[in-house]
Length: 509
Image (tube, rainbow, N blue to C red; front, side, top):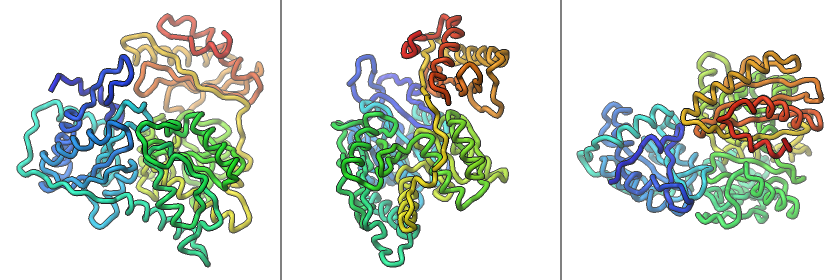
């Protein structure tokens, strides 16, 4: 096997590489040979994790990417040659793979999902789980180190079997809805009379319409792109993609559906569209999920990523009576912080990112788009029975007049140090400006409140988790406020030769 730079495959708490030679300049580095070796390395890592347990059972699944079938077979070979038994689930969602360690006739010891998540279609990778949840960054580093070393074959060759676990998982979600709605007359079909449009974007999420909602009596005739297709001929499955959201919005409006649901590729994220065609994502999705949680758990802490709005904070704390705890971006960071808070006695029942990753404490703190949709549908059905709407829960949520995110590329070999230095200088500058104030309790980058001069807003400058980029989020409650904040920042950033400011072109500066 050619020399491999294993560190390039490290993507936070996941493994990610280029699987298909589709984009010029992207060299293929995630091959079947690599997948096979990672399968063997995972078995070795698990044997230590389980203190030498000899007979391990590991489930494996994949998303619809064209590279998936070959990579999955290579992964299966590596795991079985490492000595573990393999349960092949086939086409699956990432949350379902974790749930295979929890439910079913015989839960497995660990699980692997072959997926590139939200990355481009020519990329692919692995998400790995034990029964306690997804692996952390340090765990991934250990597995990559093992893969880079000498790997012995197991003392036995593991068996390989197939299992339709997605049917088990779909039944589990259906049961959650039945029990949650508890319809007095239609317990088995509590969604009768509801039209729900699911957009799977030809990813892994089509099962939710056909195997969950339709079985519960819902009209799914307005659903679209349910068939898994690694060419993604309609739009890429991503709730943050404007084209994808607009496609669902149009479908909800023309079909007069009660609700629209859109999933990402591997169904660990979701967003909604209400009956009017209004998108419920980012801050509004967090607000809705928070309202549901705080009805049952008043005073609980909602953990979010760092770029949530000031209006959302007000809504959670003043309108809903909860606590809002902003933390670092990265779904695993947000989840781990919620787990930590519970560990020190500060109740937190929801960890959620603006990207649509939502993890409920009641559901193993698993970021599961289908479970999020399930909770929303239970609430929708109950609200309908009362003669109310789901979106009544977020009435009064302040919306900014304008907001944006621009990404400033760092032209430096040591981009982490360079980016950190720039963030520090912005903090010093903001602290000395009369109308700008550094906001306390900020866990990532620098967050600044901007007042006066028609700005009335804030900005957050942080370092990207993986790329040589400084993402800059700006929000304002004044018309033209984002423009004014951006103009002042552009002038200040001009002193840094190693910062690409071309993203400011949209402001005409």
